[in-house]
Amino acid sequence: MKMKLLAASLTGALLTLGAAQTQAFDNRVTVGAIGGTTGVGADVSWRFHERLGVSTRYTGGLDWDGDYDTEEANYSGDVSLAAGALKLDYYPFAGRFFLTVGAMLPDMEANVTGRAKENGDFEFDGTTYTASDVGTLNGQLTIADGVQPYAGLGWRSSHESGFGFFSEVGVMATNVDVSLSSSENYEANNATFRDSLRREEQRLEDEADELSVYPVAVIGISYTF
Image 1 (spheres, rainbow, N blue to C red):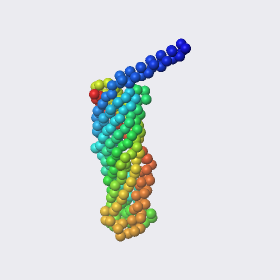
Image 2: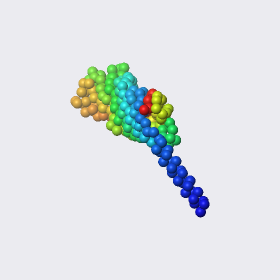
Image 3: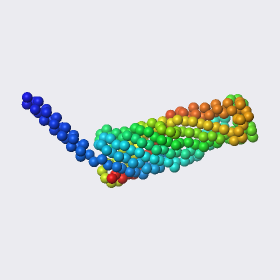
């Protein structure tokens, strides 16, 4: 009987302590300025429970030029990256470290120009086409758009009011798409070239698909209210 009373007392005490801790947790909002592999922007986080929070962010403005050569053509591209995100953050130790999952809304693409090799010709599927007939190959490479799943982990330096530090790394799924056309619209009058151009698009997609996820890494400073 005494053991039952003791167990009941301990259970009641633990429940009371747990309720007190829940009530004592002060949910806060944190805003931050961040930069990383998807550009620069802002992050807002609401931690409404010692182990749970939601966050959203937007980054953009990251642009660069790149070159890529194949046996068929020499490509150059202007890459533009931007992405929004809405995530659920889980703090497994009720501290600063968190795991996060959610959705990203990326706008990642490149305007691509393909030029003939040094001999002045394109060669597709064993057939040679002169640059004077084809002109250049113009197109667009989409790395990711629409809604894409995201998973990552991160660290917020403090949940207390004031300035802090923020970092996060993760991966986002990609959906690569390539579209090409010739500046002289040569494919409109040459079915063989048109079919070869479609196969070239697929080859480029297959090579880009080797990167099935896009690495996301951001750091920043924040202020908790």
